[in-house]
Each structure stands twice: as structure tokens, then as C-alpha cells.
Amino acid sequence: MEQKQINLLIYILDDIRKITLAGVSGLTKEQLFNPAVEGEYPIGAYLMHLGETDLGWLEVISGQEQPGELKKKTYYGAWFDPYPGKENPPKTPPETDDYINTIY
Image (cartoon, rainbow, N blue to C red; front, side, top):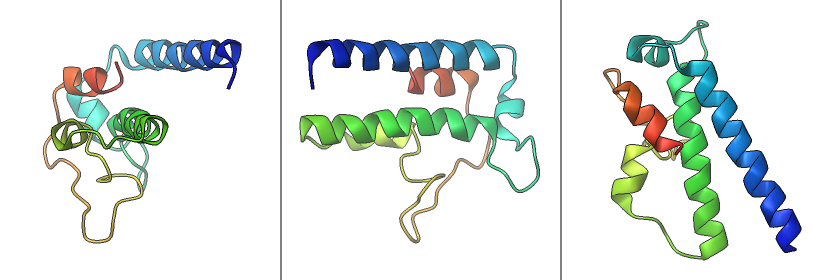
């Protein structure tokens, strides 16, 4: 991949982060935790998924597995595409900063 392509990808991902964070900035931890639509994932799950996919791609690109503690913070494999029997979404609403720090 050329440096120009890498720079563009970094810009796009950063832009997505900024837009997403601006869109959820006024929500409470309960609003982030409770599904907005019945049968759907909560908004916070989508935020965690952004962090989870970043970690996944970092592992692929670097060839190094990321620390378990970091994966635990993002509920890696707990909400989306969980390993069978490994579903482990949080039982109570995480703090708003926990969601935001996951995608920073």
C-alpha cells in the first residue's frame, strides 16, 4: 500500500471517529447502553465495535496479538460475532468515557 493511500485511510478513519463522537456526545450512559430499537444492539455496542475492529485490524497488520486487557475493555468478541459460548456483553451500563476511550 502506498503512503498516499495509507494517509487517506488514516484521514477517513479519523473523520469517522470525529463524526461519530460528535453524534453521541450528548447521550447518557443509559442511552448508550439501552437498545434504541427493539431487537437491535445498543448504540454503545456499535461504539465498542469500532474499537474492536480497530484492534482486529491492528493484529492483522502488525501480526501481533493485542493484550487481553485491551480486548476486555472493548468487549472484544462479546457483542458482535461472538465466539460460541463467549457472549459477554456488559450487564450494567459502562461509563460514557469507557465507550469514547475505546475508539480513541
